[in-house]
Length: 193
Image (cartoon, rainbow, N blue to C red; front, side, top):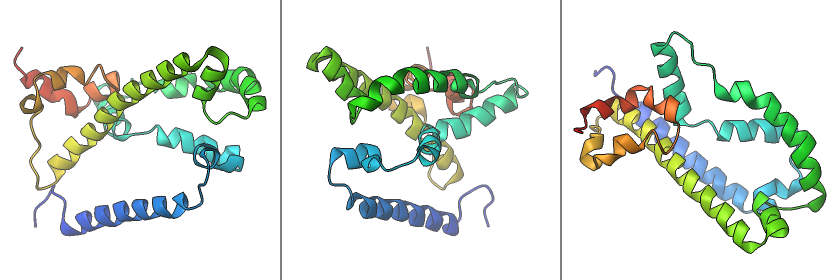
């Protein structure tokens, strides 16, 4: 028996989990008929379900790998930025933003941008968001894949073989502190200048 590598049962759990998630997606998609159903759950979801759902959806493999790695290397001197700003941001959202947006019955914040400033601002805002989330998503997928490759039979591809710019770009396109302080970006030192 090999230690440190994923066993057959581990792969089976991963496959069952992925198939379950795809199945749930298809099952819930049948109920969605409009954009309001898709984006806002038909305006039927309560705050107690919605709040934790948003927080959990923003937790990625970067957080799961980077924060413990940083805390281990720096003796728990890492204050989670999200925990420090969550109360002020919540107060601003509840008392400033929500009173403006709630009466309008909008589907997305981009609809408000179009309503208030015009189509060009809506397109600019949504395009910038897509670019930012695309960079974040690339990092969020890549970081756990490196860890999974190290734990599985597959060998991890050195970042420098993909492109010499990749290790240098990772701090820019996502979780700068979290990812770069973890073992994932340790290969940055291996890339020739």
